[in-house]
Image (tube, rainbow, N blue to C red; front, side, top):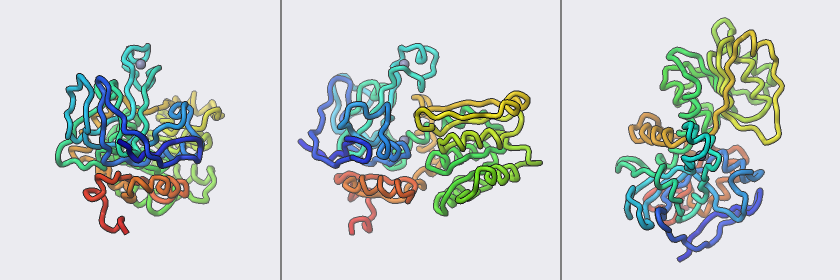
Length: 360
Ligand SMILES: [Zn+2]
Ligand SMILES: [Zn+2]
């Protein structure tokens, strides 16, 4: 049997191909993909490759996914053929130095799963065991596919210890910035966001941001001034979350936090970059600086609970639903900064999930 699958060959070279449908070995699950959602990491990987994810191309592509169990390997008890499920894109080894200390996102052998932009996806045993969940019948496949980014955002806000009434500045209004805003406002924070583009900034308000600054064309100094002006007595925010991933905005983050506040470097910068920070505010201002990467099985489970309990309307992030065959067009649109996220729907689910207008 053959299936349609997007394969990564090199930066800017992803091909839609016919590939053999994999067969599940012991402990594995073959997932028939219902929805795969695009992610900023996908766009970055398409543009410049990824040091961890695509070491042996050609390789499957895409990592936010939900679907129906097509078949199971020997010994699988968590699910059965026909179940609607969501899977995470990784699983920790549970044995290494970091896993023993419950720092699962730092696992030395974190297993990554790619290949969501396809009709079928083979889910490895460690992910089946730790990070596969059946969906409630009221949960949509598209919302379920967004469990992964929401889990990353949960990890991000958890590192901030937000208190009700805190002012939280979020730099960047990409999908993760928007989810961080939603979670921070759920925790009672007053959220101020920066970003570009009417569409994203309107979404920022939908997700609870009270101050929304369009920083298109503003210098970093102007951004700093305008952000400080949004805080009480220009003191700076209690918490600043950087969700862009450039050294310049990492530096900016440290300039708009109040003394005693916390800066969360959530956005990963290109490898080999560094920042130069003023020492005095760090020392005399007693700042806390922290980095956050990826998610853990516990955050994945918690994110799914939030989605299934309808506490966050994650589907509002989806700009459009497109047939899987248009995966490359979706990546091109995102490279041109058009849209926030797209949901890719394989042929078998198009009648159920694609609005009629997309068939034109
Ligand atoms: Zn993602
Ligand atoms: Zn480990």
